[in-house]
Amino acid sequence: MKRVIVPFFITHQGCPHQCLFCDQKAITGADGALPMSDEIVSTVGRWLCSSQSDSVEVAFYGGSFTLLDKEDQFSLLQPLQPLLKSGKVSSIRLSTRPDAVDAGTARFLRESGVSTVELGVQSMDDRVLDASGRGHSSQDNVDAFIALRAEGLTVGAQIMPGLPGDTVLGVVASFRALLALKPDLLRIYPAVVLNGTGLARLYSEGLYTPLTLEEAICICKVLLHEAALAGIPVVRVGLQPTDDLSSGSELLAGPYHPAFRQLADGERWYDLLRILLSDADTGDEVVIYSSSSRLSDVIGQKRKNVKRLEEGFKVHITDVLPESGMGNTFIRVLIGERMISGDLLTDLRY
Image 1 (cartoon, helix red, strand yellow):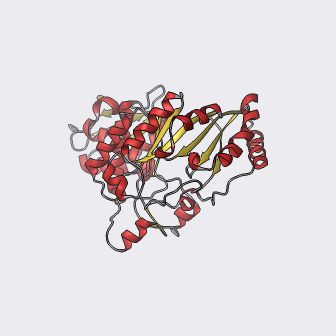
Image 2: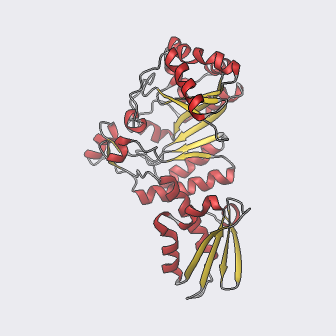
Image 3: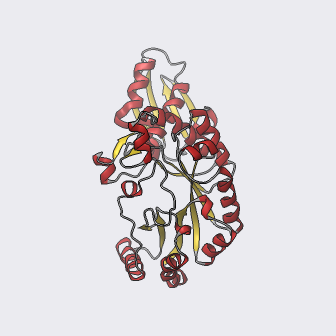
């Protein structure tokens, strides 16, 4: 059964910095007021009933949880203790800044039933962190990992390609440095320009140029590939759609797309299929077989991959079909009477 997550948004709460890129309300669609104890318990109860699940995970998103006043941290975590003991809440996760974690903080979180902490790493390049107004260094990222791991906590990390001062090579190098810390999970959020942020001011003054959608997709397909090779799951790529983002009322510029993950994943499959079709002859009929769970990524949004392959190789793709039992990284291509197999993890290199 799919894990059920009960979200509480504490937008901007506890955070001492206004980073150039940040507008948590537009990103999360919530104002971030701290929930009261009875609200926490009743919300969990409603989710248990509606999901018909025996247990749920509670998540505090946004803000910097460990920079809240200790009393506020206690007021958020304490109501969950009986629910953790009864098993109705299986675990707690939260997000915070890397420079807001030390050994004592990590111990307090573990003793309070927190199992997962997601760190807003954003970059492992000190120049980029400084230019973005993060107020912490790459060493703070490393130290936070060490402290949380010492308490046996699961550690996630968020990274943001396209920040001021960043480059394509810099993003990849930063990502590899992050992978070396062996995070348990990753989120990749290409930087976008939101109204009212410092980045919006730089953009309006011509001092910052965001990544185009095509550039961000090209970068993120490489990051997804690097993460896959390292065996680290990427749980989110691109911002979660909200009314503000979808309407464009808060978004000035940048590579936002509600299906960004599919676009980036689709590029990886396109690149692999280009390799497999490299010796196809003009007019060949082609059938592609993939895992049913990857079929839409292989085809591409609005059949983009199929169209590009047919135009580029002058072939006719007659079908893209699911194959039972095929792994999620595998694909097979029937070209005429020749069957060629490929694997994203072994046959694709960037």
